[in-house]
Image: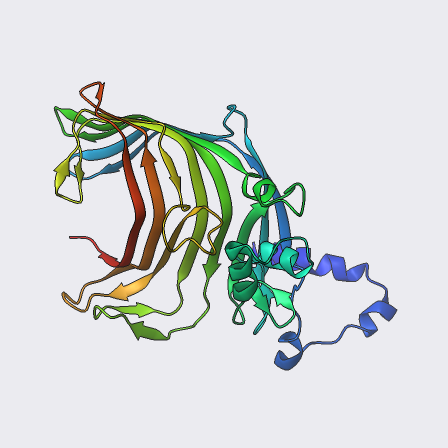
Length: 331
């Protein structure tokens, strides 16, 4: 088998003219370090995802039934563009709302708008627009293919719409099962989303809680808005304090327009997390560290039902989860 592989590899060289071979030179490490794919890869994406059942199984199971992610009309999500790059040292690549900074710099957007001003200050880097990365960082940025009128913020923010449906979330044992949530439906818009794999070798750092984590980590940053949502909250505890059994929510909206810290989010909710290998500072266990977690949103529930009867409206302003770190390991 080895001999066949070597023959196959040699055949293409036999058909190359000798004069061409004479021009081929081996590159040393210094020369190779200068060879970079600076243009990156762009992927235009359309997709619909359907899943009958997803389960985590131990003695019992926790299952998600009948999940679908699509366009609100049921067709594939579209108008999505992924840019994939491996950064050079100090290279500035697309990240977050850097497109808004680019437009502001070109005079297409009003810099008197606090969101636009924040984007310009945050993402303008030495004549480029984005975020500066280290050599070898893998950077994936999701944005729209067509964002409409370049002077319109609404066109950009509403370029990628989606619908998420989940039939039920159940806790299941050998005999009985309990439905925790059911009839989940969410519609809204997906904003700029970034996945970065930081290349930091074997270096580590210690978090404020004492956990030691790798500097080579996966970084997730996303913005989104829920414009209409509904669900039945059958049996579930919230932050181990409140049991919302027999609750129904209609007209759910999740955004970031009401509170004090809204600048830079363009009215969208945001979520951030970092994932890497880690060691707990308390137990010494090694596992998956999920750290620097932050969720920021305003939440509006115009129809809040208990036992099928509306009891009024519930609103959360400046709902923020921050300073959150988790170490996940088996037992």
